[in-house]
Image (tube, rainbow, N blue to C red; front, side, top):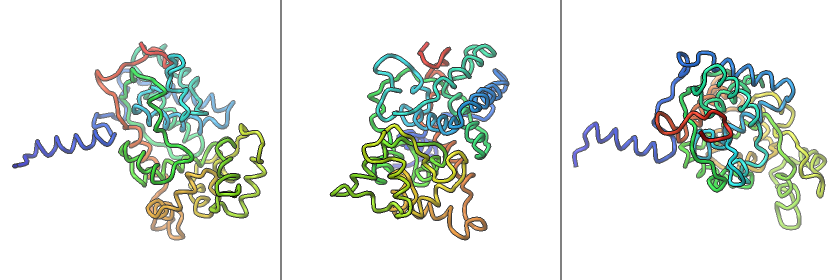
Amino acid sequence: MVWTKAKVNLALSLVIVFIGISVADLKVGFYSNTCPQAESIVKRVVSGASLSDPNLPAILLRLHFHDCFVEGCDGSILVDNGAISEKFAFGHEGVRGFEIIEAAKAELEAACPGVVSCADIVALAARDAISLANGPAYEVPTGRRDGRVSNLSLAKDMPDVSDSIEILKDKFMRKGLHAKELVLLSAAHTIGTTACFFMTKRLYNFLPGGQPDPTINPVFLPELTTQCPQNGDINTRIPMDRSSERLFDQQILQNIKDGFAVLQTDAGLYEDVATRQIVNSYVGLLNPLFGPSFESDFVKAMVKMGKIDLKTGSNGEIRRVCSAFN
């Protein structure tokens, strides 16, 4: 069989689509002509909302991740279509920020009716939120359209705090993301909190006899059990990044290396050979001089995640309100 250039390109395109990253083009400044104030409106809404909720950066970053991992980055998590709504899936437990996206959408509809998608608002809001937490500022390719499907059954394969690293790597691979993106996107836990509900097994029933996860640093274990006592309030929230939960930095990777990871899945990154090497590449002694840039690589991972299963052109719609299909 003779492979022409056209056939090779077609084969490569099919492979890319299969693993989840869409080949459809987004571009920075997509709305520069149709709604030039789009990004500034989103930034203003996010900045204003953050004044009353210091946890908003983590909330909006998590919302973007959860949106992209189900049906792609298409705003499907925002839709409220009754009991079957995707947002009610167990895998989305605790996801918030919907009202911020809706507030930005209302302002955008007043300025540029029917132009800016809810999916793009989610991506832009996450970028602005990261910046508010002293994280890197970066440009977001836009041009996504909103999906027409939202069903909680589609969220059954969301990454879970009890997943092994092998399972997580498989779930990420199915979205076109690799071990490096798994580490970098997990490092988004540098900001935000988690509920004691997700800590119970790790602290009190990880090994037979009610023993905790042995990878927890012995210095750290009493802190965790004090914050999340056995039979205590499972809704109590604790920082996911010891010492800097409102500052976007790479301290969480150092914590993972030293046994101070809060979540079981974060701790697991240092138990797997491939992901351990990636963690070490950012926190080694020589990293400041010779190692990769955590912030630069995190931005690349975010942009790549933002291209999962895109809907562009006629494949999708521009909702008038984010909580309802047109």
